Amino acid sequence: MACRNVPGMFLAIVKDDKVVLSEGYGFKNVDTNEAFTSQTPMSIQSTSKFMFTILVARMLTKYPKYTFDTTVKELLGDHLELSDKIAEEMLTIRDCVSMAHGLRFPTTTLIENWYATTKYDRIRNTKHYPVVDELRRGFHYSSDGFLFLDKAFEILENKTIEQILRDELFEPLGMVHSNTIGEARDDESYATGYQPGPNGTLLKTTRNFISRSGSNVGGFGLASTADDLAKYLRFVLREGKLEDGTQHVNPDLIKEVLSPQIFYPLPYNGVADGYSLRPDFPTTSQTLSYGMASWHRYYRGFQLVQHTGSHGGCDTLMTYVPDLKIGIYTGLNGPYTDVSWVAETVIQEYILDVLLELPNYLNDTTACTFPAPWGEPVGLPSYQAIPEDVAPALPLDKYTGVFGKEGFGCVSMTLNRTEDDVEVLQFAIGWGRMFAYPKEGRAHQFWLKGVDDMFHYWYIGGYSAAFIESDGLITEMIVSGSTLKRMPDDNKQLCSFYLTGLNSTENEK
Ligand SMILES: *[C@@H]1O[C@H](CO)[C@@H](O)[C@H](O)[C@H]1NC(C)=O
Ligand SMILES: *[C@@H]1O[C@H](CO)[C@@H](O)[C@H](O)[C@H]1NC(C)=O
Ligand SMILES: *[C@@H]1O[C@H](CO)[C@@H](O)[C@H](O)[C@H]1NC(C)=O
Ligand SMILES: *[C@@H]1O[C@H](CO)[C@@H](O)[C@H](O)[C@H]1NC(C)=O
Image 1 (cartoon, rainbow, N blue to C red):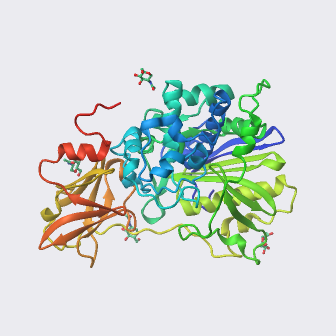
Image 2 (image 1 turned 90 degrees about the horizontal axis):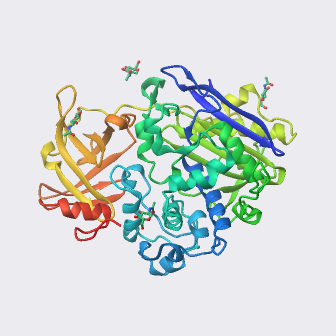
């Protein structure tokens, strides 16, 4: 933890139906020096996907007329509208959790636009999102398939998804401190996530910020603790049996959840599997396929079912070795995804070597230098602050206005003043607010610097916005890969339609 500048972490290890270890280490808050304990909840981010898939298996146990091959259309009816009408009819639960849906939903935080949309807005808006592939032809990572299942279960049970999670998973398993990250803003027991600040410092993300992306609970919105995750790892490895022996989830469904589903292309989105494919590395670990909300990998020849998660300074790694009844869960509250991924890999591979009774290939030195001496070291990144004194190509007020797109909503660009009373261009989407500073040597391009809850976006290379000019007038804005058009003056109703997918005569249902 010291050599990777990790503030705090949780660790849960299960083997052969026993909890080997369940602990918290370091600090959940470095300002107050509060300890990270085995009962400190932290956002588990994308590893929520696997936990939600276990909930899916529970719901299929409870409603046996449905299977992983039930279509989402059967569950959602008119609530499901996709731009690909064939996919709309054929999309199954299995496609949603194994990323075989062929849909590429907008993926970055800003455009996912949880600052302004509800999950129901988002479901209504999926009809605007492009289809990138035929159904089941390829792997396309996305969190949105989980929203369809979320809504389907809410209809089936006539309860909120939060209540369903409590009733069907957390209570029966005794996961007493697990909840959804929407609760982080009001819950002081949560671990604070840390991002890299200037000059090697740590910048905390607020609990309010963590809650802001809480609308997609199945995609990335669950929180848990070492003690609770140990119970959950055991439950999955016991193939769905509760402590009292009750078969809460059909064991065949758990086996299905742990099975590979779709070929995983490497490199994916330009990212290769990593260092350990090379013959000069002391071990091999390689990804072969994606299963249900998990990657299927081999480590030293043993099959792993793994998933990572990271956002807002909280990084997690979930690992099952189903054959050997091993489960490991780690979570760090900072400071950075690449570095924390390396730190978690080192910790988990060391633990795996111990549990597999293999000689440890890592020692105190290489644990800190990994992947060196065998591969290129991964150091803490050094970020540069966004310069605030670059002159814009046009006067700042030319970039003001409202810009929108269907399925996205509207961004409003206004002039504001900084705390030092300097005029600044301000970007706002829902409750998300950032200041826009011109990029050096790039006309009409701006770095976005977070304010309020987003203040940890302070560096070059994070979010940007660009504008299209025609005859001295700004006509379009490009943000997170989407092009938004300048809106006519009286734009309130249109922006609301763009955001919610509902026109003014429809009631929110
Ligand atoms: C439960 O059903 C009622 C009546 O149809 C509806 O108004 C309510 O929104 C439903 N609740 C949930 C959580 O789906
Ligand atoms: C970071 O360190 C550099 C060099 O010591 C210094 O000039 C700069 O002001 C520091 N930045 C911050 C934000 O403290
Ligand atoms: C740690 O492992 C490295 C690489 O295998 C080795 O060169 C080094 O001598 C080891 N250090 C100790 C203290 O054992
Ligand atoms: C202008 O920026 C300040 C921070 O400098 C912020 O407190 C204020 O809410 C902003 N005004 C508007 C209208 O967004």
